Length: 181
Image (tube, rainbow, N blue to C red):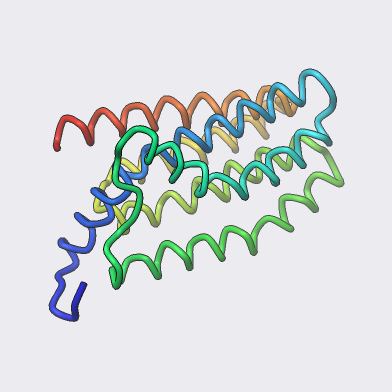
């Protein structure tokens, strides 16, 4: 992209490059689901590590899934919104020690904290992709985190909630993209 690229063009490029971000949301939801299974079968502490480690592979797995499905898996070189996406990722990573600290008090707080952190990151996706649905996704994840905390829901319930929200939203975003394109 060049210096005369408009904001709308950059957003369109990001939407088309990453299928509205839908594949990444679905992969993230699957990571939450795998962590829920690990929590159920083993322990919440192991689920913390599975979510952290699985989270590191969301982007590469999303790119692989996109390639397998024959979808575009990248933005145009020089898209100025790529920087915002990277900055949001770095901010999210900087917040994770807070969630880990919460887990030392109550393990389930880690997952509720992560729902808040990830929900906040999705809010920036509204600008990156030009899709206001990300405000709804971020808001739902944030509200869910508060509700789960207030109701003192165990780790497994928080993990399933995160998974259900992300997979459902990701599927909706995918079909919305397909309908528009």
